[in-house]
Image 1: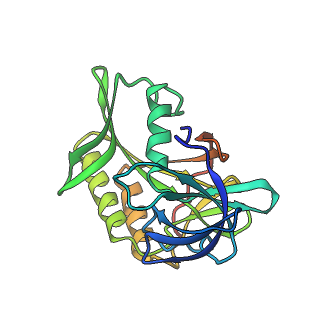
Image 2: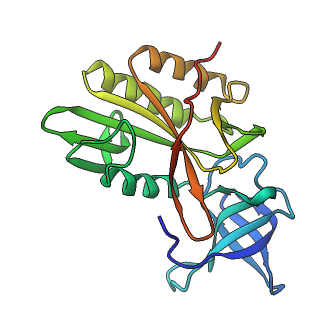
Length: 237
């Protein structure tokens, strides 16, 4: 998924009210940018960080910049826009480039299911059972090379695990897919100390037949695309 507008480097001044960030561009001008991430963004929102923002000239949008990336030492990036993984994954699914999820005739995003929920992707084919795919963006890293989910308590995520379990019980294929938006991650894990209920729910879902996949991303200021498969989070001890 290529960014619609070339990204600009900036310095983060502060993030506040979850969806707002004060930034300074390289020309010295300061602006308010939209932050498309409702999570805690632990370790990714420290003042002074080098970030990348996407400008827009849409008169319908109040803010003229959207925060897309954090740049880390060594040339690594983290994607902070939680809408990006689904767009990048959709392109890969349609192209049949997602290992373990190929061969389906239809890729249907945002389909209603469960209790007032929408599954990220419903994969359908006349020759096999439906496949329900829930996608989570993973950005937390507290140990070098290890990406963790979640970065805050997620009652919504716990609900999704229960609904995937129900789909599996009904004979469908159900997949929890963790998409790691970090180029410095080599493995994934559950942050059970942050949300013990989610870790327990994950264990129940796996026991109920929910599959788990994890993939990295290739990230640059030009685009974000699906990367290689990563080891899926192990079950909680």
